[in-house]
Image (cartoon, rainbow, N blue to C red; front, side):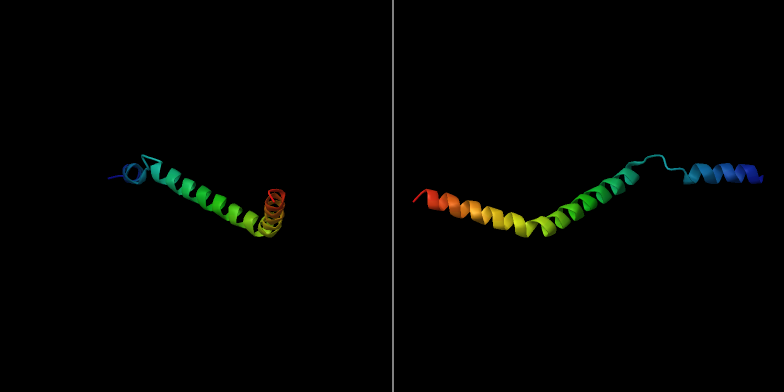
Length: 65
């Protein structure tokens, strides 16, 4: 066997026929990145949002009295 024939054989054996696994990894990374961004946003905006919602809730409660 020649080296060229061995190289062709190995190239055909190692060839990825489907990118299904690669796209699955990309989606998993994307979901992880979105989760991290959501957690960071909650950390930075959580306390101010909680304070504003508490104020609105107390005003609504006082308006009904």
